[in-house]
Amino acid sequence: MEKKLLKESKWLRVFELPNGDQFLESKFLVDRIQVNLEELIKFWELSSDQEKWELAEGYVAKQEFSEEDERIVEFLMNHASEPILSILAPMMAKHSNRHKITSFFLERIEHIDDYPKANYFQALEDTVTPESKQAVVAALKRRHRQYQLKIQGQTLTEKRVRRSDDIWDYLACCRILLIFTNEKEYAQILDNYSTAGDPQLRDWAHYLAST
Image 1 (spheres, rainbow, N blue to C red):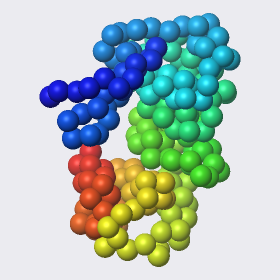
Image 2 (cartoon, helix red, strand yellow):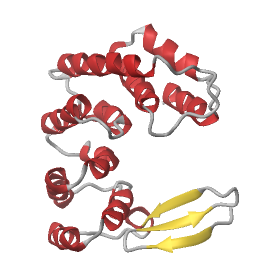
Image 3 (tube, helix red, strand yellow):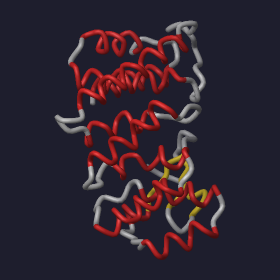
Image 4 (tube, rainbow, N blue to C red):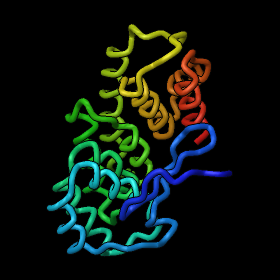
């Protein structure tokens, strides 16, 4: 597939595909670049929000996870903005202290509004322990009820749903609750949205139901 290079930064490349979509290529994944904590701290102090976003999008695709990566994750947990933290959730889930990371995710799921949470919901699958599962499920069900109240005016026949709408996170919340509880109501919700009028929302529901 031909792709046109639109932009290249220290951490990633941005390509345009033949259909007009954009594709991000992580240099951490493709070029196997590395960064240590000292380098990252210097970068963080001097960089714009856009440059930090590029780092996060590249870094989250890194496959290996070393002790240095664990220190980097801990630094970012204390210094990154909420949008950046949401991007980095899959990387945080590799941290050895699963209790710490689960608590960090739940804090954002329960108390931080206005930012996407789907990545946190999905990453919980890798951090929850048998000891924490009951509390996690209770928190997820509280957030699930809040989503239901917010989206009750939206219909499945809407042709275009804004990407910022809570409905996207709502479906991700349904998926993780289905995994943790095996309760049929969450499977039914995903199945209902697999016929939604918005094609992207329909694809999102299909993806969640199949993973």
